[in-house]
Length: 217
Ligand SMILES: Cc1cc2nc3c(=O)[nH]c(=O)nc-3n(C[C@H](O)[C@H](O)[C@H](O)COP(=O)(O)O)c2cc1C
Image (cartoon, rainbow, N blue to C red):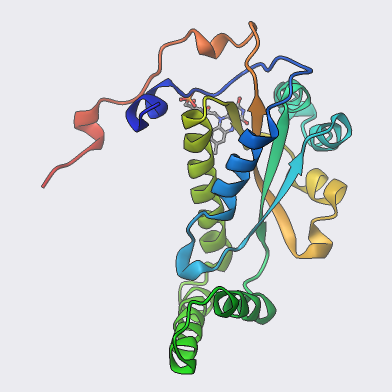
């Protein structure tokens, strides 16, 4: 599928067919999109919890009750559900871990280059910490960027998907033990096979006109 077709034909699936599991090779490609997602100064302020079992999906669905119960069947009937999480802080151990990984991956020709990269990243972190005071929002943006790639990637692979913000973060964080790991849940993405109840599949896509959203200069 070409890119324009993937963008136009993807839609948010409103009902999945229960009991159908995606091929592992497709799941691996989706996880590769997440793993390789770009982030500001390569900060990678994320973690992903992947549920592929009935029990795993039920644990995630426990956060989709009450006002969010409309999302529960999607979570339970999907093949895989990814919880996209963000770190709660961009702390020194995380920055050190990134630098060491970049070194292991052969990113630096010299110790000078290594120091420059480290300093430049820390400058950005300090900018967001002390001047902009928006470290959480900055980190969250990187997670949403990953979500965008994931949804487009799924469409290219012909995989049905549903992004979901409709869940209780506190419930899910506690259920998955995220907070003790310095993480919090941001958004869910469910993947699988649409069912005949997926009313959104038959509806036309609706977007504001191109003239309104693009300015060419
Ligand atoms: C960040 C995000 C959160 C969303 N949360 C939900 C949700 O909780 N439940 C749901 O059914 N759809 C959810 N949606 C789907 C949007 O309503 C949908 O993307 C939008 O109406 C455009 O339709 P389309 O995705 O079919 O093109 C979400 C979409 C995004 C990008």
